Image (cartoon, rainbow, N blue to C red; front, top):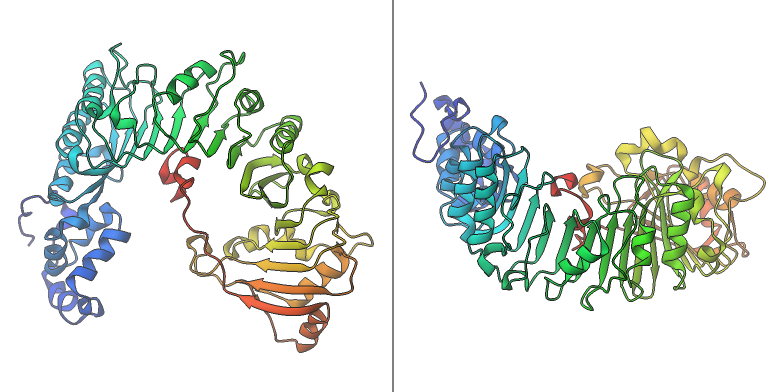
Length: 511
């Protein structure tokens, strides 16, 4: 028979306890050897809130440990609870006591009163606040949400994400809006997909480094918004709502901005008119995310525009997952980098792009028999980035290591000295513990039949993360005869970037 739910616990049958489990799971089980602090840290860092709630049903020891550790409940969301039951968010926040919060809320026509009350009561301890308006609110709900976000200080807040494409924020009032009563001294990240017309400058925007706006529908409105922020570092723009005439004159980016991200979620409008009206030559980083249906002519024009003032020394090219005709580009020179996503493959076959290349990285599916790459006369270093092991069955057939032998090489790089074959470490989440193996014969045939380089042997062959199959010593010997030196390195785990959050519409896209 289950016990009454203790104070602060969501009334739910999932919390009922099986008393026969207590002695085992709370006593001699392997997990019982963990200290309480370590046990709770596992839940705090890795376990989503709904699973935390369910875990309290396991035994009294688990329930007592979780309920007595407020930091376990410091990442709170009502997204995972179906139909947003009344009281769920209030109960979860009560468990966190006074811990610093990362709070994510769906606001609906049914729950807006509870949600806005919870934001108001806990905003002072929020480090991150994500508000997603999933319904159209009535006038009272829209006004209440606006008031909470504009009248309450947020002294601990570092990140604000407001997703409100129905434009309900300040929709009924034409008053100027000052976020958080002008008091958010730690605010670093702002993603506002809402009505921005009434937003005004305040001290709360002074520390913001990373911005993403939508909708911004003219150059004039963009210039006004940029003037509200003291020293932003990275700006991301969704251009789907831009008007076609691009009126408003040239936009001058603040001197503090180092990176610009332009995102198109449809085939129109083009990013080129925007880039033509923004002075971006001084930027260290420029990233363009193009829609899958972007035309070849538009993509080619964008590539040309991005590269026209720079001498490229390094490019990474990779096919995207669902099209053999589209690629992703990472382009580097000196301290600059350019990223173009979902570009038609033929768009990179520009002589100016490859003429000065010295370093090139290719995804394993980067070219086919019909679409070889142009000659790279200055290239000395080439890397092949392998497909994740879990995708090999689906995409492996298009690997450049499985191309049929051809009389003419697919890629000419006469000065090539180093070939690197790279696979992600098994510890990377997308790798899902797969270890990538590659046969020496596959590498040898790729070098022999599909690459053209002047010398009979390369200086170096490097395997990074990928493991060479050594069961056939004769095949290994034939491969090593083509290089002066062979070495293996552990797989490289790409570190988190300050661009990551800005590159996706909603942070859950990265989950």
